[in-house]
Length: 227
Length: 210
Image 1 (cartoon, chains in turn purple, green):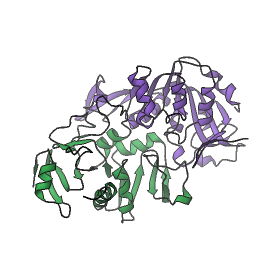
Image 2 (tube, chains in turn green, brown):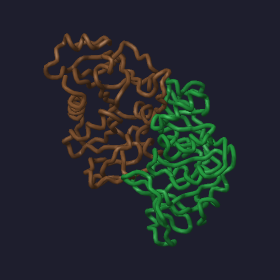
Image 3 (cartoon, each protein chain N blue to C red):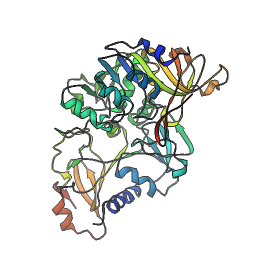
Image 4 (tube, chains in turn red, brown):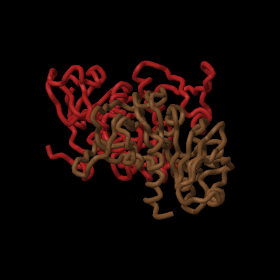
């Protein structure tokens, strides 16, 4: 269960689909992302709400040209994404944030997809199946899964049970359910029994590997913890 | 009108008057975020789509980098607050458990349709939670400056940018006026202090009734 960064990321291969937790840098697995920037890998499809910020988080993978396609809801937070897109160097799939979240949830819950009212009648509904249910128009959204999910949690026990910290939770518990291999980086590792069973958000059956977080988001920005 | 900050605060303050508790309200990015500091009712609970019900302001010394609102600005945690994941957050929104959303726009038109997520030819590629809030919030209030930076009306006959939803918003609040949207038409219900009807007419492209 416990791994070093490099070994944990050995499951990421060229052209893989990789889910990355976080809302911008908040709750993003910064240590694992840093590990990906040091790994020789290409053609990744990244599923994440944002592509980090310019030169930060997933923004580094972008400038390394390791990302072929990005699926997310808010690329505006990294202005470089637009430049890459205009030059035809990245493919983008924009989804409403709730649809992104629910599609991942559906992927982890064994569903093929679902119908939603979000986006009906807009450009983002173009080409999507429309269906009327009880007089209301819905569009079909397929579930999303990935080869690998890298996520951030606060504490893990050595079985892989996870708890999260404040708004750093965001997409992480969903992505933990929707990939073939799930790697969680955590601030603190404890023994089984030390986490309150009622408070566990991600039960351990979802999690494959745990790594110690070394890159920490502070008020002053991202810092590397010397431990 | 005074400087930009005064103008934004005037709009935010007026929007805050629409919120009477108990209710759950989601605030968008920009002017909507400012609404928080003018809410006086203790039973208005602020929801942020990145996973917190019970958003309050935070003092500089108490800032926690992992506690932010949808605009990624630092916030505080109210007594009785709760955290949840993004799918649950949007289930709350689409499931009509959020009473009101206050949103910024690029354009709004005389039917109450808004455009706030894309500009053709520009690198604005973020829809975020806007489309979900439009389909799910029971009431949608737009807060916006009346005109864009180049002086053009943001309240148009018809949106020229891609629309965010086929649903009409319920109310539009600017530094000049308040409009209600009734049966896909605009009704001017209030002018801000010192604003003449002529000025509202001059700066509004959309048709409206008084």
